[in-house]
Length: 232
Image 1 (cartoon, rainbow, N blue to C red):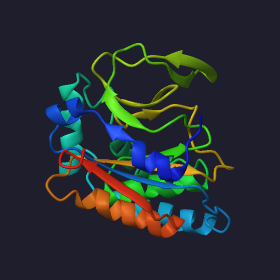
Image 2: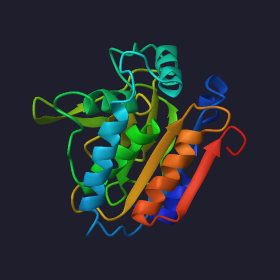
Image 3: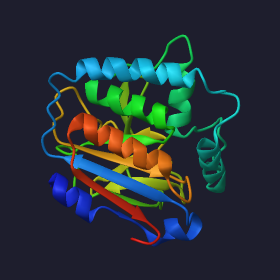
């Protein structure tokens, strides 16, 4: 069953085992039942340009302090950075490449650009295709993950012990914030959205807070919730 933005915000959760292993972890959730995408294309264009400009001020061979924390977290569950990069690292590297940031659709372009600008991983979900609240836990390995391989849909599975975001149908994002399922990805016609901003940037989580404010202002979202070790 699909879920309202209000319930998605209030009922989503992080399992205690995540905080046991990464006590500095924090997530900011944003959601809305009606985002008016009309007129946001110019904002997306401007944000993409700003993100590319910002990325060029960074050294892609030396990750910033927050990205470095994510590299260590990935190593903690057995994934080396070159095997699976935290999404913001991959996007930043794309931004300074000849190809530039990928252009997907207006909403995805906006949150990808904000991810690069504030150097935090952000995931976006189509709540019309999301089943129940979001939950972050350590994978048991049997959870289905719908993705594409060689242009065709396939069902994959996470590794045991891998942090994954899930809904009632299966994995919505593997390796914390590495790759999203095609099942709940935001499409051009999406109007009901949920966003997940992950952070290990202790103690203040400045990047995630600023990214949440930036995203909320642009999209007119007023449903925001933070989950950390003290509020679980």
